[in-house]
Length: 218
Image (cartoon, rainbow, N blue to C red; front, side, top):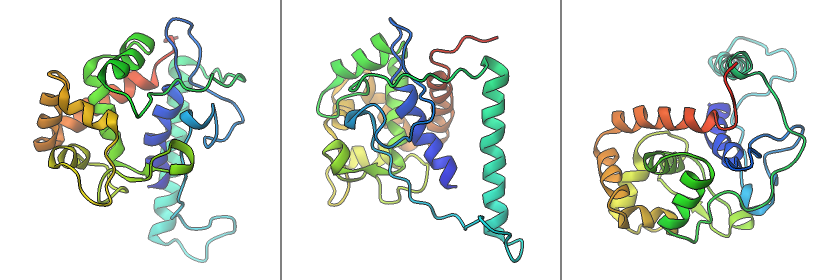
């Protein structure tokens, strides 16, 4: 499950550097996710709970089977993208600061997601819901902590916690709180807080749109 979690978190980090007017950004070849593009465009710290597969395992344990299943899933995703779009990694690292500034509000979110990346209002809310996974790291973003009580589970907890208000140990960025102040964003937050299936369905669409930024179908 580690790779799936990292894929959900890493995709916005990479694809979020896409700039529609210039057609630049999104991919970096041979570069680690941590530190790519400067402090504002990085922040992934991977915690690996998977078994060590550097040597032949003594037995086919459930955890080993899970690990191999995830590896095959990630490989199939890679091959699907290669089939649909061709795989064209860029050697240039995107300029720092293309991801949203967590200290700003809704106008800034729309500037980044809609004007720069070409997405829509609903995508801002659904992709924000991806913060149900993982957490922020002070040395990279200036903020510390998870958004939800179980940051290893992908669910609608982000929206539930956002509506619940401040809670000790949980993070709420200015960009998170701003979703509650917008007449378009807030109804979506309220909808996803009570309807997890709706969030999953809309998130899948937004994640695919994000993944396809900068690609032209062959």
